Amino acid sequence: MKFAIFLSCFALLACLEHFYPRRLIVQAKTARWGLHFFCLGIFQVFVIFLPALTSLEMARFAMAHQIGLFHWLGLELGAMTAILGLVLLDLALYWHHWLFHRFQWLYRFHRVHHSDTALDLSSALRFHPLEMSLSLLYKAAVIVVFGIHPIIALSFDFLLMIMAMLNHVNWRWDPRFEATLRHFIVTPDYHRVHHDRNSQRLNLSFNLSVWDKIFKTYKPYVYEDDHKIDLGLIEPLPSQTVGDLLVQPWLEEKT
Ligand SMILES: [Zn+2]
Image (cartoon, rainbow, N blue to C red; front, side):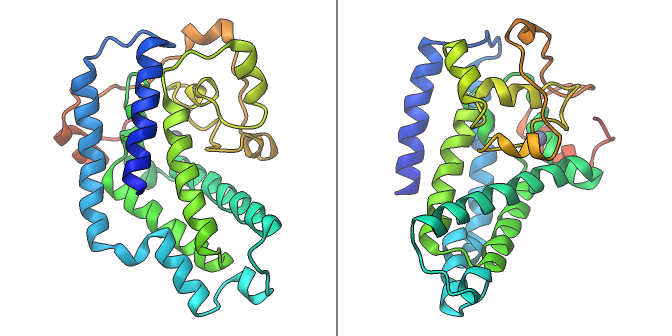
């Protein structure tokens, strides 16, 4: 079911960015999408060997053994605990992203995502499989520590999947609408600032944009300055094949 929802959202957003593109992308779409879907495919192979670590399974485990803050406090599933759980997971994800930019050994994996010299819907799939696996472990630990209910964990996974596509989509929005929305959630323009090679440690939020303001990592998006945003790494990769992306963490350090 998750894959069907993913494909439906992907197809819808693909149509929107095709008919209403935000920026011109010169790279061939088939090559970009092929590369990025391959990254996702490799990770899915990893997941086959780690089924017990998925958010849902970890949440079920925490509930079955009554482990985690929510269970210890006796908080039943309700509207307030659902909102609290989703917000806590989003906050945890902000710090996850912060860590992957703060520590060089983690950034080596994350820079695979940042080495993209354009941004479109498929960029949401472009992560090194080991980064995705580490993220899976991190999220599993957070779910157990807080004792997140399985329904909340599953809902967050869906939200994250949709928001990741929405953050990267190359779909032109009304500037006033986008300017209002970015006060609350991460929009494509907001997230593009994070992909500027000169401001990668800023705009680290994934879903709610408030974390950047609280933790002082916020950089405003200025519509008139969009052309100054330079996507990718300071030293771009000479080529971008599947092999290049997979070995990138072990190559000479590039920022
Ligand atoms: Zn990043």
